[in-house]
Image 1 (tube, rainbow, N blue to C red):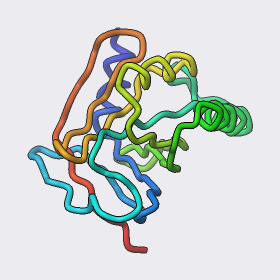
Image 2 (cartoon, rainbow, N blue to C red; image 1 turned 45 degrees about the vertical axis):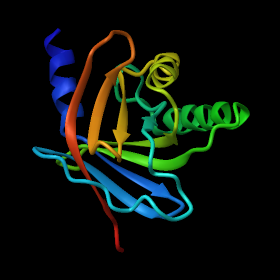
Image 3 (tube, rainbow, N blue to C red; image 1 turned 120 degrees about the vertical axis):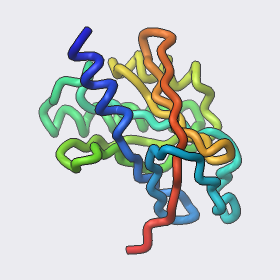
Image 4 (tube, rainbow, N blue to C red; image 1 turned 180 degrees about the vertical axis):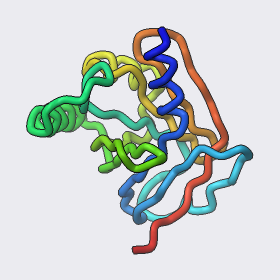
Length: 156
């Protein structure tokens, strides 16, 4: 249980970079809500966005080639289901851990949990730009941890 608690604390410090049709955004957990002002443009950002990955099953570092292959299969699965998705990256606060991901707008929490479980993930993220929250949603249990979130455009 201690290992899971350590990983869960790491999830809570993770920030997410999303490449939306409106531009790149960074979503960070915060101590207070920061309303997201950028819901206009080509991407609908008025609904929750679930962030999924197929990298590093069960939180164990896997070979990069295996991670990339698994991620391509996850994307193929989303494409076959007709799901709209955007490239994303989950990044540890200290920058020493990152995982390629996909952000799926409008995907329900239970469906995100199901897909995460299929790809042997411990959790998925759910960013709600309307409520300014970032949730960590366990894939194999009912555990959910919600924090306030801020999202800002990346101008590089």
